[in-house]
Amino acid sequence: MNIEKPEDVTAAVLAVMQRTHDPRLREIMLSLIKHLHGFITEVGLTEAEFRLATDLINELGQRSNDSHNETVLMAGSLGVSALVCLLNNGDKGARETSHNLLGPFWRLHSPRMENGASIVRSDTPGPKMFTEFTVVDPEGQPVADAEVDIWHASPVGYYENQDPEQAHMNLRGKFITDAQGRVSFWSVRPKGYPIPTDGVVGRLLDAQSRHPYRPAHVHALVFKPGFKTLISQIYLAGDPHMDTDVQFGVTRALTAHLGEHHEPPPGSPEATLPWYSLKHVLHIEPGEAKLPRPPIR
Image (tube, rainbow, N blue to C red; front, side):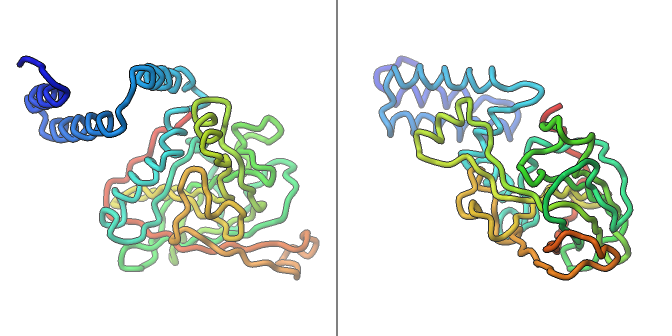
């Protein structure tokens, strides 16, 4: 077709997209072109801004490697990751869900642990914390024999695979739910931490006067055949960044209040006081049990 005016470009591209063979890809591409062209028209994107945008997209890819994924970091900082998660769980966003962001630091092959054991494997100063998670199905019935992979940051805000001071697999462990659907373990209270700000995402945050912090949380990945693999983060109420999470991950369903204890826990008379307790219920949904790909190596 002959192009005479801006809207002719959109019409021509949509005609081409309409010929896409795969129905789902056709649906996605048609919507993408409508929204993308509409966005460019609405903001009146200049040629200089277009060139800058392509440079930024290139930089996102160039800064992604085996130990860092700038594109995923940007998706989280724009709320895209959280939105995709909520739209794909909890009956397509109709109800609250235990699903949440995977984050970049999950690892395969965490060591198998007995319930009640400690996942602290190296000198990790900080308040002691005892955690108990209960896994239930959509009817609220406990799910036994589910594999629950746990990991979290240290009290100084570093994960084991980004901190050479921590022992291999420190603050990580894999547990099996008992007949009541429970797993439990000792650890140390984690701390919130900043996301990397030395790239495109950092410049965006600076332009918006946003801080780079994520609130303290504990990761849990629940795997059992017959259920969709649950990827979750349980956020610790009281963290100063709960309402301003840079990755928009905090939900009401995944906010947990810590118990503070000033008496020694049973069996640990010399435990540092105070110590803390964390309890939360994780809801899993029917579906495919499939592990994700580790985000970084």
